[in-house]
Amino acid sequence: MSKRRVCIVTAARSEYGLLRWLIDEVKLDEALQLQLIVTGSHLSEEFGSTYKEIEEDGYIIDKKVDMHLSTADEAGIAKSMGLCSIGISEAFESLQPDLVVVLGDRYELLPICSTALIMGIPIAHISGGDVTEGAIDDQVRNAVTMMATLHFPGVEESAANIARMTNSAKNIYAVGEPGLDNFKRLSLYDRQTLAENLNIDSSKKWILVTQHSETKESLENNLTMASNIIKALEPFDDIEVVITKANADFGGKQINDYFEGIVQRNPEKYKLYSSLGQLRYMSFMKEAFCIIGNSSSGIVEAPYLAKPVINIGERQTGRHVCSNVQNVSGMDDTIEKAFEELVANNGKYEVSPEYHYGDGAASVKIKNYIKTYLRST
Image (tube, rainbow, N blue to C red; front, side, top):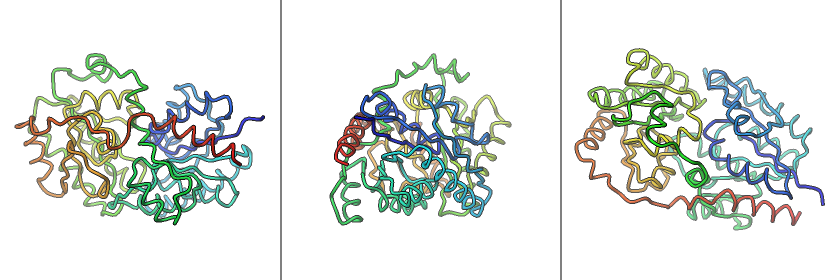
C-alpha cells in the first residue's frame, strides 16, 4: 500500500515549535509521507528567516510559499493573505496531499484552510476550541474549526466548544497541547550552558519577556503595555532580561522597534531576539525567575514548570489560568506592582506543577488518530 501524504503547514516560529514533534512522528512513520510547507514570517528577514531553524532540525521543506508578508497596516496583511492563497493553491496542486495539518489561530490559516476546503483536501486542526477574547485569534480559530474534518483540541473544555460549534462530536479528540512535548523530548540546556550561549550573567535573576500585539487594542495602547513592562523592570539591577520579538501582526513591528531602542540604551541588561529557537526558549523558560508578557506559552507551558507568570492584557482572556499566573491590565502600574510583589515575596508563587494542558504526549496521539482516519478513507 502506498504511503498516505500528510502535509503540515507552518507560518510562524511559535507555531513550528508546537508542531515540531508531530512533524517528527509523521516523518518516522513508515505508513505516512511527510510533506512540509513553510510560509508567513518564516520567510521574512525581519522576523529572523526562521525557516533555517526548520532545516537545521533536519527536515526537508517541500514548498516555500512567500506571501511577501507586510505588517505595516491591516491592508498590507490582507494583501499578503491573498498572495498566500495563490502560493498555497499551487503548492497543494503540486503535492496532492491526502490531509493538511494546521495549528492554532494565526490569520495565515484563513487562506491556507480556505484553499484546502475548495480543493477538497481534509484539514486536521490542532488547538481549536480555545477562547482568547483579546484578539482576532478567536474568529480565525473558529473559522478554521468550521472548515476542518479532524479536531485536536488541548483540553476537554475546548473539545466541548468544538462539538457545540459543529453540532457533532465526530472526529474530536482532546490530546493535550503539543508544546508540552518539548519538555519530554528536548534535552534542555543547564543554566551555565545557557548563560554562555546567550552571554548573560548566571548569578542574576533572568526575566523572559514576550509581548505580542493585542490586535483588538490600539497601537497606542499596545506600546503603552510594552513601555510599562520596561518601567517595571528598570529599578532592578540584579536582573537580566531576554525579550523575544512580537509576532508578525499589525503593531508587532512598532513593539519590536520600541524594544530595540531599549536594548540599544542598555545592552548589558536587555537582550532582544527575533527567535531563540525552541531549545533555547524552553531552556530559558525553565531557568527564568519569571515570565512577563502575553504569550500563550505563559498560560500553557509555564504551569508545567510551576513558573511564575505576569500575564498582561486581554490577549489570553478566556483560557484556563493555572495558579502560577497573575493577570494584570498592563495599562497602568499593575505590571510594576506585580513584579515588585514577586521579588519581595517569592513564596507566594511557590506552586506545584500543573498538568491541565496535557502530559507531554500529544504528538504521538495526533499521529495515531490521523493514521486511523486515513485508513478509513
